[in-house]
Length: 154
Image (cartoon, rainbow, N blue to C red; front, side, top):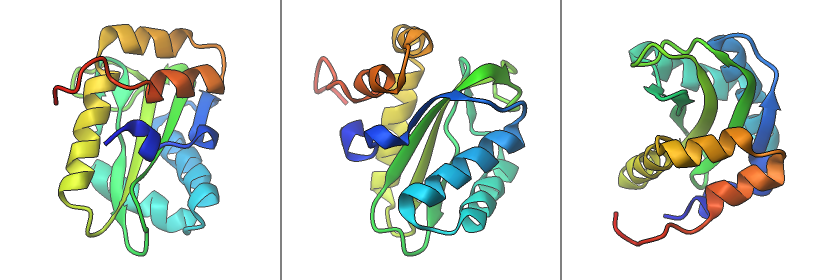
C-alpha cells in the first residue's frame, strides 16, 4: 500500500508548534477532523486511548499515533514535523519530531497493520528521517513520503 494512498498533500504539516505529547495529539486531531469531517473530540479520545496502552513513540525521534474510527471509509494519514522535539514517552526515551498519524476504519484489520509497518519502516530509516528533517516545506516533505520504494520487497 503506497503512502500516496493514505496521505494527501494537504495532510502534511512541516512546522507544528507544540510543546508536549498531549498538544501534538490535540493539534493533529483538529487537523484530522478538518480533513475527514469526523468529530475532533472522538479522534482525540481514540488516540489518547491507544496511547494509554503504550506510547506510539517508536524510537529515533518518530511517533506513529493511530486508532480506529467507526464510519471512517478508508485509512488516512497525516504527517507532522514539530518545530522542536517533544517528549513522547518513546521506547528509546528520545524526544519526537516526526509524527505520522494513522486513522483506520474499525474493520481495516490487516490493512491497518500493513500501513503501520510501512510507515514505521520508512520513518525509522535514518536517511529518510534526515531528509524529512531537512525538507523546507510541505511539498518537499510530501514528495519524500510518497516517492515509490526503490524495490518492491516488503
